[in-house]
Length: 352
Image (cartoon, rainbow, N blue to C red; front, side):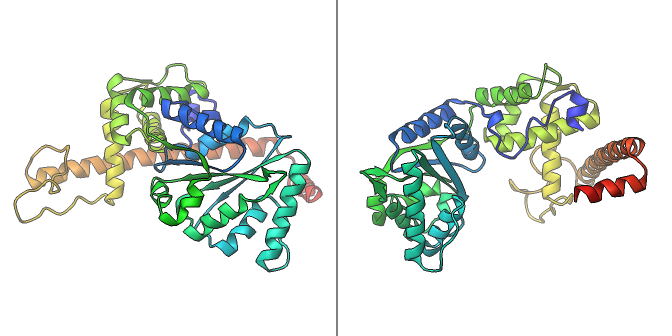
């Protein structure tokens, strides 16, 4: 719907990590250089941390795009609280190695043979571990032991660890002294500045064919940064809703009040559309009316909230009608171009 309305080639603010939309902010450029340096070293651990939504996975995917597929073999795992005995099985699965008979010794030997075979073929193995803050200390120690596997003095696998900020605290544990000595590069990814937030939004829009419509005022960009804190995933979420709002309201030039309207919709949804109860005592910072609404009698404030909810319902109804209209159009087009029912069944059976 957004793409059709504004003439984009695709969705500009998808939440899923996509290296095609990588924006090289100052912090992201630095993090990428640390990744490249660690990869060039070819040994030990590379640690990248950052708050949720700052783009750690996208950054890593960007680095992987630069790798020579014939010289590198990369495997990725997303961890939960993986215990040491499960870690080796998880590594085997990530590299596509069939699991041997139960028993840790047999699993380690299977992994060692696989790593040796890849190194003999001239390939460098990289293991990418996401959500590293979930790893128990004993599992991190198991990874350190895995990094001891070598051939002719060269390590057989290099491990990249991505985690949230608390992972840096984990690494200060006295029991991980030997692990810390194996970290060859480490960087903490930061959020975008106000200027970078604007460039990030324009970068993603341009990637899908944006030519200036819709436009965004300076204050609009500033409000988006203020509301999201410069966290890319939050920016994506807010901008998607802003563009959807623009479709429904036929907006070609966004300004700060439009951002405020979308933010209010978010807050209404979080509250279930019900205003908080007015406390019987004196008004406090969290009392009714919430920040942003003028001080008015309770009845008038309630009427204003109801009017806002009615406007939200109208926009959602318009969205539903638009989606249904698109679906009906697609179905009608398929019915016009499809052969008769008997032929369709036969073709499906042949494909099966």
